[in-house]
Length: 315
Picture 1 (tube, rainbow, N blue to C red):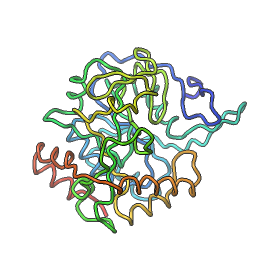
Picture 2: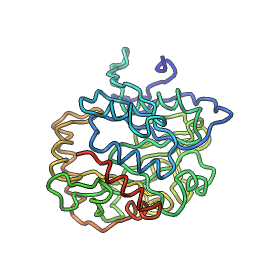
Picture 3: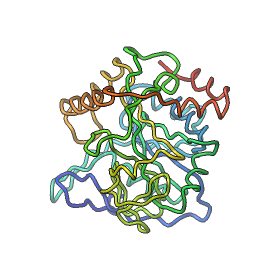
Picture 4: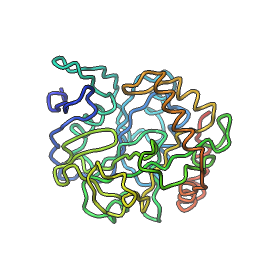
């Protein structure tokens, strides 16, 4: 069992795990995305299509007990050959201390220790998050251009309702082009990060921060500038160069209601989760700007790809 190889760091809840990095396979290559999902059938095809178009080669999907068409789509969709599905309902706590293990963090630790040897980089994002190349290169090419860093942090670009009360036709990327204005204040709840790492260098796993053998508790931004994880919220560290992380947090009012009803993957109660979500939404909608990085990327890769994403969106 992989849990014999990870150790909970000191906390009342195990939000960080220490891991032993896997040895790299001689032929490891490419970028993989790791995600934990539940009941995401209306969004899955578009998310997969977009990231394949951006150069992602493999997906390790942790299936968290979906009751909709998500499992069938993962098994039989057009990208099934790129996808490894891992059933994941790990409700566990440390027997000695009572600390609860985050299902998200344990999934990430499992991905690194089990599959990390196969790929050059792993990105840890959710289905409502899109990695957008800012230029004409693939995500992997952009990562190489950033430099030989094992841990890269990308700040959330937080997208709002876009004026939609109900779920619109045509997919996420085409319909949501207004996001919270940046830079966020240092104390903003919107100023969080997701990471792309060399899995064969990772020693510490979290949802928003990782530690690595070569960089310790430090991470690089997309300009290649390095800071301690705790200092990433400094204004001079914020960067959306080369790769932008779009977080389609709100979607329509209808979809936001479903999100709050579905509840969190991790520790929060349904009630506290709903309040936290609504506070973030209010902050996003307070001041928005137009951001067309994602649809512009689709225009660069070709109108046929963009049309395919819209056609495959499932209501």
